[in-house]
Image (cartoon, rainbow, N blue to C red):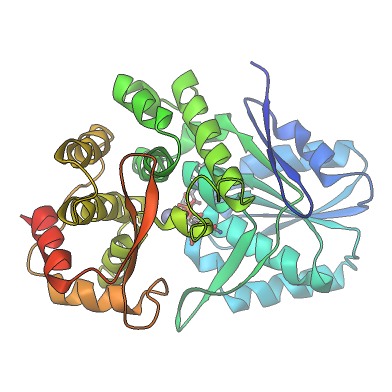
Length: 362
Ligand SMILES: NC(=O)c1ccc[n+]([C@@H]2O[C@H](COP(=O)([O-])OP(=O)(O)OC[C@H]3O[C@@H](n4cnc5c(N)ncnc54)[C@H](O)[C@@H]3O)[C@@H](O)[C@H]2O)c1
Ligand SMILES: [Zn+2]
């Protein structure tokens, strides 16, 4: 099947290419001006990296392969320092390019290297997890962790192009694929309800790597993110809601991640977070019982969690209050005023907040 090209509009519009066996397209995204490319990847993806290296070398571009630690261990100032040193030793210039191959942790790191080396060089991202394809690699947010917390240091640096080779998903552990589906479904609730229809029509088929349904869902979710980051949806979803709409389910989800010391997968936490905020919207008179039930049934059909342990309310509330989305003393939630109609709910009462927790923890 042919590839799909999704433009992400902005100061410099870039393409997200989605398809099977599209790794060779990396050279087009690198562009003609590079004489050197640094290819960063975790050790687990060495075979894939070899294939990308061969494509780049075949275009007569010198490639420096740099292995970075797996997953979150890559998002540290120590790793950044090591890469900066390597680029310096190899004489990387403003016209050279960094390429990141891996999950969202790798693409966040490589985006940050691209943003900072010589105050910004061309960056090409090749996301290899579902989460990275539909979320982390698109939108230009880059960052690393510090001892003070996750993603506290970073920069906006849109990539020059993103390459989603669907064949990469074949080796992804199923739990990671399902966790990525939580972000796909989020796109359905906030903007594109067709995503929900597709999942409901065939939840099993939707999680088959290589299948047409998963491809359509990936493309739709990338389109949602592309529209949101380009500001295209601002009118439809109200003037106050730009990128913040992407935080649907995240206030409660982040609190779960925090009190679980980040042992939960992000997508699992967001899944419960969406049910929580759906319950909150129902309590506030915004969402119908049927729409809340739809959250549970869709997420359950994808084997995602829809409840959290009882007896943790005080910890959760404290964690929500320190989440960066809280402004001043008031908690802010992206809620739905009907499916596909997001809005902000600011400062709901503690009674409502707790009642919604009772609904997800009993
Ligand atoms: N910048 C953003 O806008 C944004 C948005 C969402 C998430 N993120 C970031 O993304 C990160 C999470 O992303 P993630 O879930 O992809 O995690 P990850 O990068 O840690 O990858 C998860 C695991 O999957 C492995 N892996 C990657 N591709 C594989 C493949 N094709 N086959 C088998 N194994 C593979 C990795 O080696 C790793 O062990 C977090 O650091 C988060 O902060 C960023
Ligand atoms: Zn998320």
